[in-house]
Image (cartoon, rainbow, N blue to C red; front, side, top):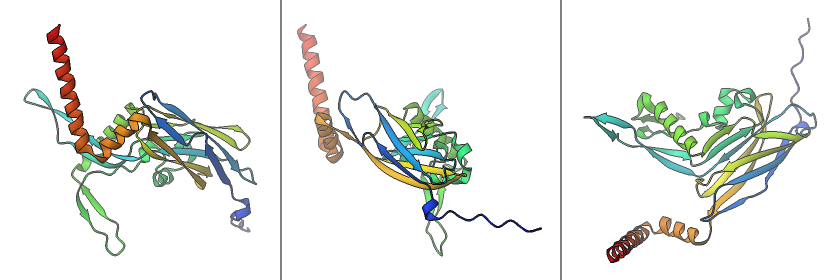
Length: 258
């Protein structure tokens, strides 16, 4: 019996590619901003017309997440020692042509951080071992076995704020090789630069990728206040305190006059 020859890998000329563009690359936020919807159009070019899946990942600027657990002490509910997670995206949505688990295996999705369950959210480190002889860093977290519970709490918090989501049918092919994705951007979306990754999968493996950029920025008076608060927080805090005291004094004077 003659064994079948191994499959011949596709040549670069036969490789599939993906291209995409956003209908809006700059979102301007003012006092009337109530959210937006970002539309992405793209196309798959494959000379062999193989079955393909598309995954679109929109990831916002990273923000630390401070979270505490309530516990009952002497009949009172008090917050435990807060835990701060670093490296958590402020906004994350993964949209795909079908469920991610049907597109690729766990290891592939984890490596690409495709899906909320596969996000790398760094646990607070109590101890770090430096790399030597090619050995990766070892991080020992004080959370121990409770890390997963705390991480799930972060995801629940972000999901409740409409900042994390997975849409298993958020990408759909509208014609042969042409696809469309619509990404909701809530009013609570953080300010900054967003990375949009468009991944093309075939036979459970990513074969092509494109990256686009989306910017969310404040405009008008809101932008001036935002820059003031972030660049000169002390003066902004003092000014806000002075304004609150002045407003309180004015209100009390008005009520006394009445």
